[in-house]
Length: 318
Length: 318
Image (cartoon, chains in turn brown, orange):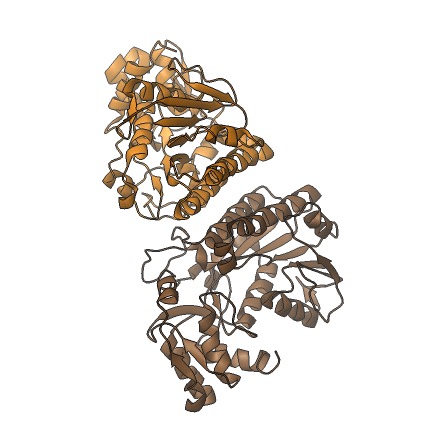
């Protein structure tokens, strides 16, 4: 069983690589080859073939698919802030790169399983209190539009039998290890991660703001579950909104207090940022995720569990 | 006021050209130049600039936009049956051609009005009895996927200020003049058109099958209305599901009987076609079209009116 991960040098890509290495199997078969793609070399400890290059550049996708991986995790992409700042880059990587990968698979004519990383940013307001599975995606960002185009391509290429596709609309992943990034959602992780690492953290939004999150560990679980799912029970609607924990920022902080004490939680400073607040208010807050739950996708049940996952998997390791 | 129509040689393109010529104005301003694009020469009587070429070929879109049309009707596209039969052609014309046009407008940096012809084929089942405006599009055809990608691009390019876009999800257009085409929906027009022209017509589906239709005249009205609509009241959801008349095939035939007598209606033969029936059953049947109606888009109120429009506009003229 050969497995390809695009975007393998990213945070989820690295954790998924480690998880596959630890399991040694996927779909009940031994992994004989791990093919790791990114625009920089993926620093995996597991034995692997590394391929460095931009999927939208001619020949890169074909080189990856020449190994005929039976399971493909397509994580590669430009993130939301970057796609908004650089219009051409976002379309080139997120749309043209995805299409090049799909076309290379179609040309190779062997119908592998393909798990596609999408996002709840495909949704744009106005929103109902809870977003049902059949709520129409109308993204308010170039990133959301690009991921939505990938979802549409995924469903058509799958319907045509070119691959066995399944798309995962990930909620916000928290607690992200490492440094803060430029994403407006960065603070959801920062207010937990920085205090646990002895650093102050700014909170740019109101404490009663509610948002849906899942841990990196849960995200890796989503991808592995999708790789092994019986697609005959999924039906033609292949892009699933995944579950997460809907909590307020205040509830995040309460969980931090329970886990690490009031002194640690006291390192969070309320520093309202009107620019961040304006963006955050356009985001969806709570999802039904009915189909994904019925199909066995599992996130944490509480923010305490999300915090626990961070402390076990990442604290002081980065 | 310069006006561009892509796909101007098509049925709606020709009628829209004639309507603009007859009006002489759009957005209250005199039309100084009509630019007609298609892959074949558009046989318009009105004075115009003709540009023949495939939008996905480098330079074609730029040549069209070099005239800086202030209003653009983007009708060009490969139809559903062709897009399903020829995967590459459909993506090249419907996706790459649309993106090339949008990119040429972006590069020209002048933010014209752009009216995009989309389709109710963006919807895929299972359906509720009536499809609400916020029902998630999950197309079951390559054509639907390609049009949905165009919708997503339209919304992002509009949000970015590259043009003032509005997308129109047209219902089935009936009665189409001229010859039957390969579309599975062809019979909705054929059972009316052929008998009125003294020819027998085969009905491949059950008479109680319900479907939503609007006349070519209504379709032209949709495009003209969209060209002049105040987009500040439309908001960020730019792709509108348009209204139509929801009627059964039996009700179509009753209207034909009223208008032309039982002998004419008697020329329809029930010839069940399992292949057509299988396709038709995957189609949406009835739409709420709440927003489009509130924004002033008007279809006919009855199939008698649709039939009347055909008799006035097209009968014995083709």
